[in-house]
Image (tube, rainbow, N blue to C red; front, side):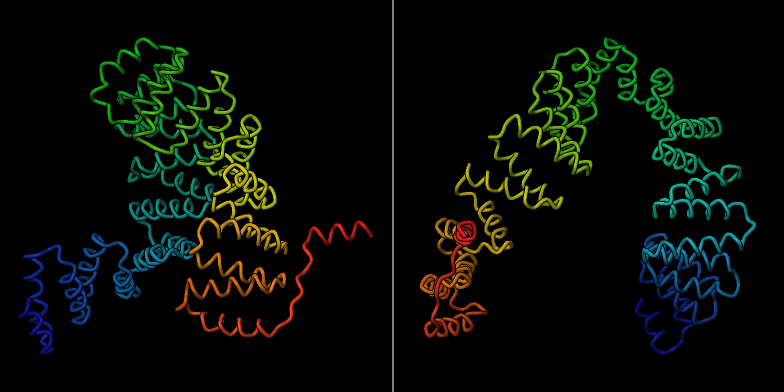
Amino acid sequence: MSLAEQYEQNEEYEKAYEEYKKEHNARPSDLGVLERLGSLAMMLGKKEEAAGYYSKILEKDVTNTLCYEQLMDIYVETDRYKYYVYRGNLHSVEQKLEQAINDYKKALNQTQDERQIVMTRFTLANLYAQTGNTQKAIDEFVKTLDYEDTNEEVYIKLADLYIKEGIITSAIDTLERAHKRFGTDKTAESLAQAYLRNNEPEKAKELTKDELFKVKCMLECGEKDEAYKILSETEQRHKNNPEYYALKAQYYYILQEYDKALECVERYNKLNPNSALVYQMRALIYENTNDEYNEHLNWGKYNLVRGNKDVAVNEFLTAFQINSKSVDLMNTLASLLEETGDKNHSVEFWEKISQSEPTNKKALEKLADFRESIGDYRMQAEYLEKLYELDKRNAIVIKKLAKTYEKIKNKPAAVEFYTKYLEAAPTSNDADAIRAKLQKLEHTDMQEDEGLLDKIMKFFSK
């Protein structure tokens, strides 16, 4: 390696190139050696050899933008297909997906080679899928099906897109063609999953070789005893598999043994926490045991995990109507309503939390912030005073109190809390500014403002 570097420093590039090749033979995975070989090959005009080295780098590091740029330079005049493909790869790595799509479309116009066409359309389809253009992705996958070089992955991805679009019969037709053509376990299992999704558990059961999936099909077919027999015989083998406990929960649910079903759901939850399926199973069980509170609570959590926040809010509100004492539920509703933009409704729940737990700091902070946002500084001061009583060393709260009292022109209180702030944070960045403010306050006459409630009462009395 040192000899190669020495030759390179002496501008004896051909000798350096040969030494780096020896080093590459000894250490074929060394990316540094490959980079030097690629660079020297370009310098010596050995462009095809350089392309080989850059391709090897990309096998190990697909995000190496320099390699794509060098390969584009190599092929810009000699092979427009490869040029556009590498440019498309570069744009994909840079997350410029629309530009990548245009590059691959141009690459298609530069080749008649069947293998290259299949690969390019496959990549195009994936890019369309990533950009949310599902129909164009489907069209590209469909166009590749008639070529001999099309592999089973094209069929499986096409079927997945059909399922995503809710066209289950087209997904089944695609997978049946794939299974007939390739006959692999992968196509068989994908087809079995599609059959079950289409309410054809008998077909799915006959096709699958997956032990637990077969049990699922049996349960759907009403073969409870046969399913339980397999579950009992395979417990040791699947004791760390959450799917096993989901199936066992389903079995007990069918038998209406809901306590045992819940036990299995909890076992599943330990292995796969915060899954939407956990909340769905709990909700269904509680629905059948007439536990409306927990039913709606779990439907709320289920929809929250799935990103359906508005539906989740409605479920949680229904649960709250049944049990208005749960502080955890109040916290969930307060935060969720705030996230969905219903700030006024959110504040109602922070107020309820504060009433149930007078020392809840988060609730007091939220209420103080809300009062500030609507200009009700007297009420803001009240909440900040409560926070101060809970933590008299909190410099942030002390400073906010001082500013709030200054806003309502309560000079003694403002001076008191600005002084306390300097005691709590004497070296803070704004300490000098606060000292100057205190001096100014000493020479400022203030008359305390009326409170918001006082103003409203005076208005109505008029």
